[in-house]
Image 1 (cartoon, rainbow, N blue to C red):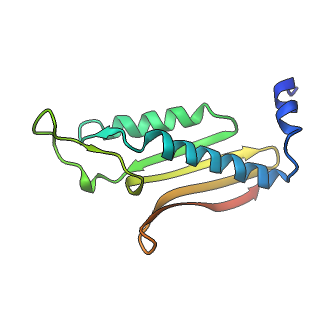
Image 2: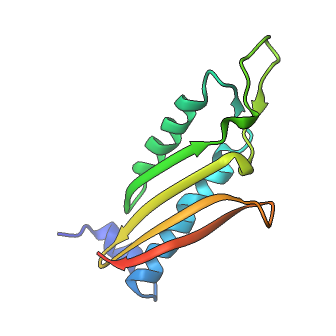
Length: 128
């Protein structure tokens, strides 16, 4: 049984299940980008940050799975109090699966090297 908040939310959307799943996936990727870019980062905390981003994303509506990978090529072992970098969008490689009713969408955010841009895009849509 659906609760009244779900029904109320649904009443604001005039789109297919696939379009709604795509919308939800875009919201999740945008949230990850804008919430975490700028976080202090070092080789010692990169894995913890990856898991925290995944865990935070998993509690959002309609998320089935999420995998976060941070490019470690810019990281180094911390040698002093001020020796860290900040997370940038080009370091993120995120794949998220969202299911809304009859539709499942897999969306990705990763650096597109030709564009030199952390692009968010839909990899796959399918019937759930």
